[in-house]
Image 1 (cartoon, helix red, strand yellow):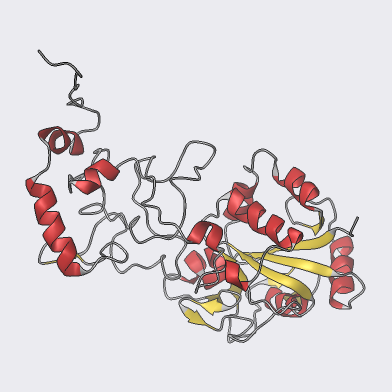
Image 2: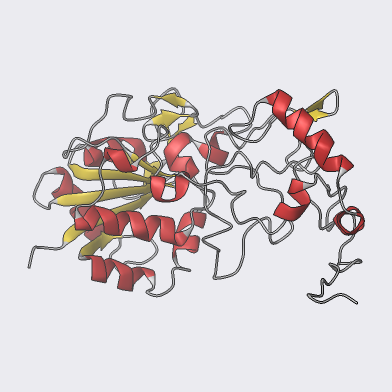
Length: 335
């Protein structure tokens, strides 16, 4: 039996929400999953007992090559400020900026994994003028670069794996780590933004429970309405790469199923769309952000036809907070 893979998890500029989400992993739970995959957790700030000098010793031994590091996970963005010193975020007890530790440890890692959109692209921490000069590990927003540089490759010649999401679905993380442990993960498993294709090759639109309303452009007009939220309520599920409506959260939920518009949290720059998250920007009444792969002219033509054919049932239910008109019943043998 081969030796277990060593995993180190660090947290930088962020809320810790990806760890909170990870703890919701089920069947098995996160520790059970790591054990089954043959992954040894060297240290995690929320899951490990080691503290203080014990942690410093682990980090120093990894940096010195005394402990093999197979997977380095970073949660939260890299804080480079002020003036690229990184001193806005010092790693407690070491007297050094976290960003220097991330650089040093990344050079020792077989795989480097950014957990969450903050670690991948900068995320929420980079919003609002970005006073802390936050960035991702290999991206700064949509641009390659980040802390490690556009040309960074890990010890097994892999770029940073960006498990983007705010927060990440627990299974996006556990599945990717398990694939790495099994030797089944390569650059071919990543899309052009470094996201695992196991979830990023799908759209949030897939499996959306409001798809019947979308088909007929029967739109919600206010929160709590049952209709499609694309036209008025800011939903970009037709453009967002993730499987949230087919790989549900906590077994049964998603943002849209909870009544919230999809804000495309797996994409770089989602944190500052340039408009209210819950309003759809339009030009001449046409949404600016059209469904992925759909030409504007086709959308306009199909939307017009769909609205002309909208069943009365969907028109009424779209602007109600409960089903007002039930679907008609078709009998096989009509008299």
